[in-house]
Length: 315
Image (cartoon, rainbow, N blue to C red; front, side, top):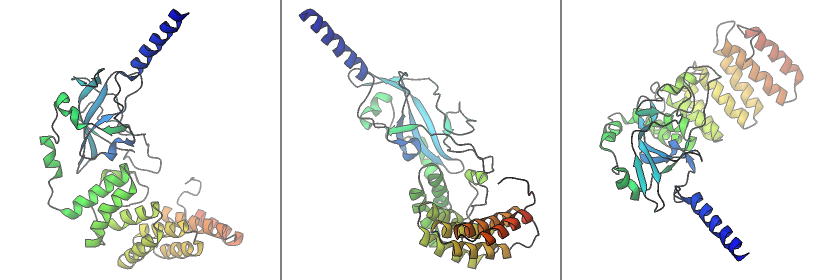
């Protein structure tokens, strides 16, 4: 009986050791890969995989977040990182995955082919690579090749682009920090085209649309109202401003405010039929529904169909 108990204990100890072998408990995969700009990272691997993939995360001005793979490694019983070079990873970093075999991969949450039904993916989890293992993996604190990607002369364009990439791939709060710097200097800055602009159903180019939309997404409605009212005063023909300001009032459950904005937006549309005209009338109908005014809701729903270039289409 004692021998049986001893045998069970030994087996259990061996099993426990096997479970921790190849795992560094200091690595915490708490965030997606885009949370670690300008850092060496290790990607979370499947439980069945023996090797970890590691590389450097940075932003390329015309593309956005990038991951440059440096190799793979395994962890031995002494917690040493053993480099395994030359192995291609199988991680997916973008919705279209067009560059899956490139040394530097674009990281993008959604595709950029346009339309309201853009494809999205779940980005891989990552963790900062512990610096004490850099020597084992033959890497420097900061790679020499990274410097040109962070050399720029136009601060407005730089902050605008970085705000776009962080807002799209990381979180709104980081993007807002960059965009507020732009807005403070140039509140009507037209911006530059970035890849994710193609995936939007409405043109969000320009600092006012970017920052105001981010305010809406973070429920900073009062800031958004001030911004969009000023934007409309500066350019009353931009229908996007009316759409976003209307969304701001809807976020505050101010249905009368939303109705007023959409009606002013309709006044800017001189054609009989357009998608924008139909959408605005539809939003007015929805607002009246929330106000329990069925008569006005039906009236504006009919107008939405009347204004639509494709009444049978479902939006």
